[in-house]
Amino acid sequence: MTSRTRFIPLAFAVVAICLSPSAYAAIGLDRTRVVFDGAKDAVSMNIVNNNTELPYLAQGWIEDEQGNKITSPLTVLPPVQRLEPGKRSQVKVQALPGAKLLAQDRETVYYFNLREIPPRSDKSNTLQIALQTRIKLFYRPAAIMPSQQELSNPWQQKMTLTREGNHYKVNNPTPYYITLVDARSGKEAKTAADFEPLMVPPKGSLVLGPSAAALGATPYLTYINDYGGRPTLAFICNGNNCTVDLKASPSNE
Image 1 (cartoon, helix red, strand yellow):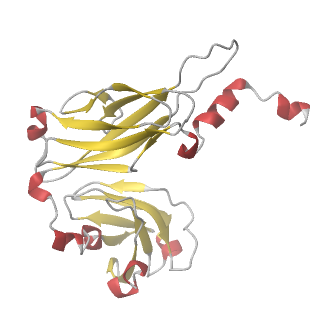
Image 2 (cartoon, one colour):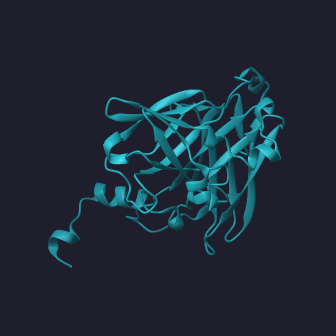
């Protein structure tokens, strides 16, 4: 190890640890996103202490779309709990009366946070890091809960693209959020330059980063579904308007 490597500033070391994959976290969560059924009072998630030697505290809370910590209309129970080594437990997101005042014709997005707090070390000069998991939490009103038939024909298939200048605009006519994680010009093509993941709001539109030229006349978009899966949809364009081509979509082959 060179002296240059050995004396990395502590700040950079801390950043590297905090950005480590969740596989290094002691407290594990059983999902990558939460869909809260508005017809129910709560949704429960399983958590586990993957450390077989040390107990950890698990602290949970909710943030709104702007990143502000909230305690209503949804709250986390219990807000803090102790998990013994290797043990499992549950954490619950509970709806309060204010949830009925949320928009009932579309989803509302929040963020569920789970922070692990390690036991205090008896050793001096020990740096302890509290890792944190942050996932999307979608409050889905009972009025728009999809039926089994609707689930077999995902609402993401209703997306359209409109060419405006040198870019495509993604149009979401549904009452649900659509999270896009990849855009390319063809089934076997690489991710288009300048693409950044984006979340298109219900009944809203957002512009894709890549140029329309980079995506071509048959763009492929990958989204995240309720279960964390990543289906891909192929689009076919006619003039400035593009619609989903189910036959060409890899998810339907």
